[in-house]
Image (cartoon, rainbow, N blue to C red; front, top):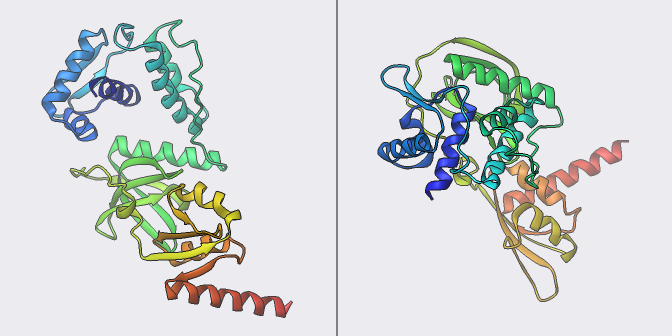
Length: 300
């Protein structure tokens, strides 16, 4: 829908000093010609947008402008502001909200939107510092160096940063990993000793593919039956279509997991009441864990 796209373009322009037409076309999955027409529509609506060609060129909002009220309703503007406030929740500032309020003019965003989004983590300060440092690296075209804690082990990494991503309730870096020679998604919570490195020549980085099967491919398809009392847990984590209810009230499900530890951890949340039908590798891992716990208990 064109209006949704106009709102999206405006939101991006409010968050970044300058973007290119090809970038906007890729984000909204339309042609550059369509983006050009959208920019013209925003200009006609009274939004002071500047465009420049050549190296270093792009699209940006000129300072001191106001959004024409004929383009966006108060409710639509409030929706944009809600999204920008969610970004402020990470840093603890109001820089995005203040920018939107300034562009919209006084008295236009006085009503609460009814939606509050907080993207911050419990350990807020370390996370906001990492995001700030990554944004700085992306803006300056510098590599980042960090120590990374992964399920497969610890390692020192050097990456070319391209996007800071919020997905699946956590923050990630999407960049080119020099040791793996491929694009990778790094979870910020697992990063330590993050520092800026040397300058690099930016690649034509693809927009991150964040589909579940791309990032979390199914390696263990777990089938199990659990008592009806755990229905809430299945609904909360995987939705009300993730299981079928049997005549006796019990719930049977088949859920895919990428890692064996994740599958075992989820099954343990049923406190021993899950009847695991397969796969055998998961059943064996549960038995070995039970034997290990019994042995540890016997040693105390």
